[in-house]
Structure formats: structure tokens, C-alpha cells
Length: 428
Image (cartoon, rainbow, N blue to C red; front, side, top):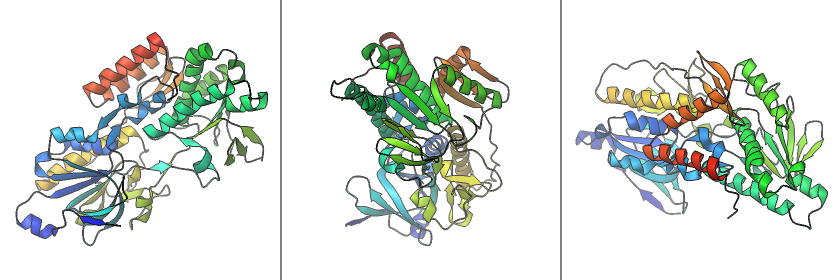
């Protein structure tokens, strides 16, 4: 395997010659994209490394699984930042960090070739991976919902299952299995996907497959006692009752033992036939985070100091879903990562100017969730509500948070198009 060496000049020499300090950022999530907007880009030689060459607005990802939104409407190319600076991007995965030499090893996303990058400042914002709890069959037979590729696979599978179920050679038992959609995990992702799928069935698929609708089932399995446990208890109960009225089967206090090719096996050894299993039970550390020699919390996240440094003397920082500050267990959410990115961008600006750092203060903006049939939840310090008006607020809030005018325009157009013409049910 070949090795290409980039920026291999010793860092001490680069600084002695007056060149800008090299800042390497790992990841292209909320934390990175926010940080790049607040960094003084003229003071750093910036390099971003990630296997994904775009920023993904994950709060609207469930809407893409059924065609309410199109995939490209919620992404922004990371190279769009090059208009503001001489930012360099490599589509690759960081596989190792040598803190003694300030070198990182990267593996290209296309040919597997490895190369080295040096840094003066390193920001680790690699996010997290889907947590499977080492349950057999999850990786092989379930679908996740974390990236656009995941959403596309789910969208294709839903349409495929309906098309297969409509053929005359499929018997009743197989048809019922194909049309049984199982969601594992009662957090925001699982709840919103179940809600979006229900809308898709009621608004669009029932017209295309009227003879099949009586056999369609949606089942949501949750290991704890309720849905959306991070939300206000009354909002969680409202969601549970709403799903029951929508005939979404909710099974709380239910553990999954194994995911089979065509079924889900529960802890009591009973089996639920399934044509699609969507797994959304939380997140865990990436392989890189697991390999790093720094303290971690029980969830495997890097523990940083008050200024998000894992090694202040070496100028190594960590933000987003892969990290947490000591004594401050903030949730792994988009708004937390966004605020951490904003803070660290400003902190690095002050650090390079040798100014006294400010303390990070998290501002909780509340939580939103879509629960189907043009109803949503809002759980904030000042408002705790649900219903149609909250759905309008949910859409408005996310629309304002989209990163570019292009994304805002595309999302508005997609919502209008879906309302006027329905969601697309083509498979390609």
C-alpha cells in the first residue's frame, strides 16, 4: 500500500519561518461546520479530513426516508467553505494519531491509500457510530438512519417491499412479513421515522396499493418504559397515545435479543416477522475514539477540560458527539455540537492572539420532534406544547437553522411539492 506524505515539514520549522499554524479538523458534522463559520480563517492553514464531503442537517434526515424531502436538500458541500478561505479538504478517514510527532495517519475513501498530515492544532470532531449493544444480526440485517446513504436504502426498501408484496406469487404470510416495518428505539430518530412512515402510508401509498393497506403494520420496540424519555413526561405520554391512535404498535420495556434475516427475536424468544428493521438505539464511539489514550466517560466519549482540550499542551481539542466536558454531561445533540463548534472557533481565535479565554456556556434552546399527521412536540424552558401549531413552529425553526439560502429554498420547495403532488414512490 502506497504512502503519500503531505505537510511533513517539522512544525517547529514552519512556525520559525512565520507560516500560519496548521489546523487539522477531523469530521464534517455540526461542530465542524459551526466552527468554520466563527474561525478567523486568515490566521490558520486549515485542513479538514472526513469520509463524508458534505455537512448533513440530520434533524430533517427522517423526512428524506419517505420523500417528504429530497436527499440533496439537506446537505451542504464542505468545499463551499473554500469560497471564504484557502481551506483544504481530503475525503479520507483518520486511522491513527501520533501525539509525539503531531502526525495523523489517514486512509483515502476511494483507493485505501494511506497518507500523513501534520498539525499545530488538532480538532477531533468525528461524531459517533450507531450503537448495537453487540446484539447479533444488527449489522447484517437491520438498517440504520444516520447518513444519507442510510435514508436512501430505507426509502428503496419500503417501495421494494410494496412492489414485491403486490406480485401474485407472494403468499399471505410473506406478504404480511414484507409489509411489517419494525423500528427499534424510541428516541427522537425512531419516533420521527415511524411518524414519517405513517404519513407516507396514509397520504401516498394507500392510493398506489389500496389492496395491501389492510396488511401494513408499523411496530416500535423500546427497551425502556416510555418514548422520548429525554422529553417532558406529558409530551412523552402524548406521543404514546398519538401512536396508538395511529395504529402504530408500541412495545415498551421490550428487549431485542437478535435480528434475523426476516424477523426480530425478542428477549423472551418470541419472533416478530419483519420486512424492514430500522435500528435507532443510540450512539457509541468510533474506532478512532476508542483507540485514543485519553480518559473517556461510560459512553466512550473523550473527556475534555473546560475549554474542550483533551491535551492542552499539545493543542488537541475534541467537540461534538465524540466528546464531553469533565463534570458537564451535555447530550449528544445537534444544538450542543453547534454551540461547541461556535465556542471553539472563537476560542482558537483568542488563543492565537494570546488573549484570555472565555468560558463556554451552553444555551439550551429546547427540543423538537415530529410525531405524525402534521403534529409536533416542543419541549423548552418556556414552552411545552404539541399539536398543529407546534408543527408549524417545528418546520419554521428547522428552516431557519438550515445553513444556506440554497438549502432553505430547496426544503421549502420540497414541502410545497409534497403537499401539492404527493411524495414520489418510484424505485430506481
